[in-house]
Length: 110
Image 1 (cartoon, rainbow, N blue to C red):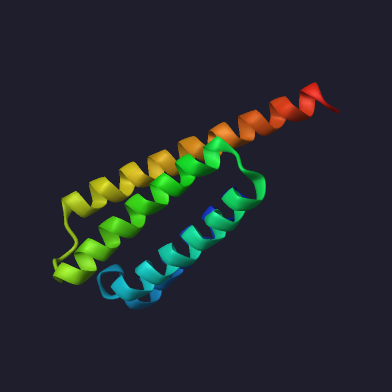
Image 2 (cartoon, rainbow, N blue to C red):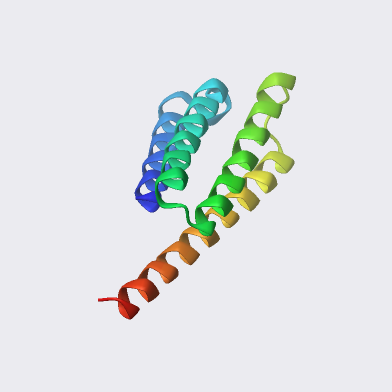
């Protein structure tokens, strides 16, 4: 579920930036990040796995970077891209850990 939510958010962000231009969708990015964080929070409460907490940490990175750039009205620059890529890397790492632990649990208890 977490990977599907992540993929939907990525596709929605790419589609919106294609239609309106990436520099013009600051509020929309913040909204997308907030919705994705809310979905991950529901998963964290429902399943109570440690990797979901790591995923929530990456979401705070996304949300913080986008909110900072939106509130300070700064143009998107290399620092924004770097921080966004780090948050994406942490999110993908946590999703990888989640898949790995899920497969181990399934293999141990068929």
